[in-house]
Length: 359
Ligand code: NAD
Ligand code: GLY
Image (tube, rainbow, N blue to C red; front, side, top):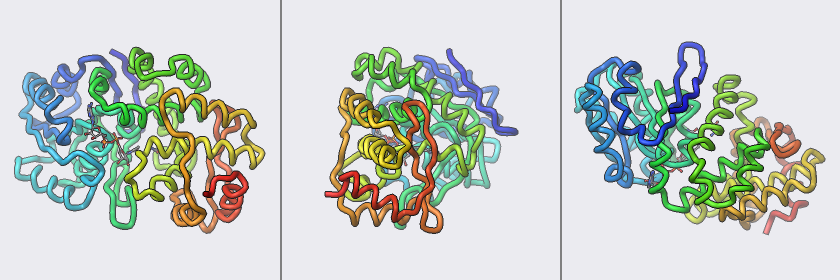
């Protein structure tokens, strides 16, 4: 069993990684949760794979377990499904000492985390991430949210879990495309923080090889996120570095109405574009783009996605990291070291054109 402690004053929690940890969840949760009822929120793909195992383990730990299922997919991260969850939780007799347990990917984690943060003004929350993306990113750091008509993740909260339990074995059932999407975020950590991780991923070079070390790789990413979140929980400075590749990734996701490319695929192309722009800005060494491209290709990720100037304009004008017409663009000083470069949105748009990124 490997453990990482996230030290946020008054809201400390452990991230535990262990093969088969689902079957020990009841025992591990006993000291962390006070109440009797533990409600598992999961989705329609994950429920048949893992929910009954988790429920059994919770019973063994002395909990009354209930399972609530939402349809798989991003569309469940919406006000209607959230409201339904609130009602279902209260119908189960949830009290303020009870807990909500997210079992699934980032959709289930974000949605049920927001439900836990808001029902009865907040009940205990546990993350059991089952996608690579959720294990390396969304289950750690406390961002919970739903999507609105106006955009993704626009209603949410910072609400830290009481415990994160990661079972690397759960990733065996993950479809290839979802695994690749998670790898894009893993590669991002290598780019912004950990050159050794980047080099190790280059050596591994395939899902099969990476799966043999996936528990350690995920924990390494969690430890980077821990360091970032401990210094900047509320995303006002250092945490923005986690957005490397995301500024342009969001353009690509939106340009195709979130239908053609997954988030990870869009971020992959966004990282290559960010490296090229970083070089034009005089920040990123010229060979960086090629090195990132090579690694992404090994894991079957796209390295460019066509978009029009109008697509860039539409998304960049709404970017979360923009303020008063300028934007904090995350660029690499070198592989393993990132920094935020503040520049006018217009200047970024010019660099995008100069980089040949508009079709
Ligand atoms: P997801 O939750 O939709 O999961 C992807 C697919 O994999 C789904 O179809 C799901 O049913 C299936 N699945 C999950 N675990 C499985 C398993 N072990 N075996 C087989 N199938 C499995 O998507 P995701 O990529 O995990 O998360 C994306 C979401 O995360 C987005 O909504 C994004 O906004 C959010 N996110 C949040 C944060 C954060 O900090 N809170 C960070 C990054 C992303
Ligand atoms: N996924 C980016 C963050 O948690 O800040």
